[in-house]
Amino acid sequence: MERYQSKLVTIFGGGGFVGTQVVQELARRGHRIRVAVRRPNLAIHTRMFGNVGQIHPIQANIRNAESVRRAVEGAHIVINLVGIGKDSGPQSFAAVHVDGAATVAREARAAGAASLVHMSALGVDAAADVSRYARSKLDGEARVREAFPDAVIMRPSLIFGQDDGFFNMMAGFARILPVMPLIGGKTRFQPVYVGDVAQAIALAAEGSVKAGRIYELGGPEVVSHRELLSLILKESGRNRPLLPVPTPLARLMSMVPGAPITTDQVRLLHVDNVVSEAATKDKRTLASFGIPPVAMGTILPTYLWRFRPHGEFDRPTTDAEGVRP
Image (cartoon, rainbow, N blue to C red; front, side, top):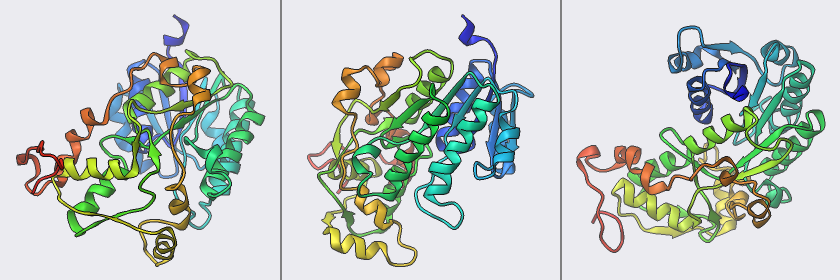
């Protein structure tokens, strides 16, 4: 079929957590890939995911239109995975999520790309009124669709996998802290496996689903923030009490220099992050791609063992609390 013919793909942010998985997925499908990143030397490892010459890291910054134009020249498919969790100098939410996303979409259209896949985040529509991050993501989606109407927008929930940020960070805290701070304990999440997200992005890029739509990607389980932390404690073999932190105190803590969480992220932790009923009804979920979602219990033990007291020599317990004594 045509979608399996080798095409030239430009992936912005291809050297990151999700990006490396997307690169591998598309390389297995035989495509030629440009990994467009700000620092190509940090993406050299992606070359091993394909055959000799199949994957080529190049320099590009989505805040620089000329570099984006060079990166998408001749590309059949363009994928934008660039995102930031907090403002940092010129790398602001507006510059990256809004203006940068618009630049990629505009230049992809001008270069004659047949498809564009843009990764956003689940729940940004619900959180846009309280979070600058969410607002920038939502505004970015609008700018992308304005410049490239047939773009496919992906909204994944919290993503888990070998090099994820959230689960590894929380397990790291469990290793060194006497208690686990709990903010927004009742907030619901629907964590999704990075391999499922990468496969969905690859299929969308190849035209396997209807273009011009927003797809919401969630895993098979809906869990509260409290349940997520309890699961992390179980897999990391740590017995730590969960300490609820009132929102005002959490916001105050986030203002301390070097704090591991920002005020914006505190706000996000009070907004549900699950696939909407509308997306399920309209068939805009992983099911649309024919992907059976992978459960957390299948993947988390394969990498969170690093945080157990005795590493790989510890075995998960099955007691009532789900953690080691």
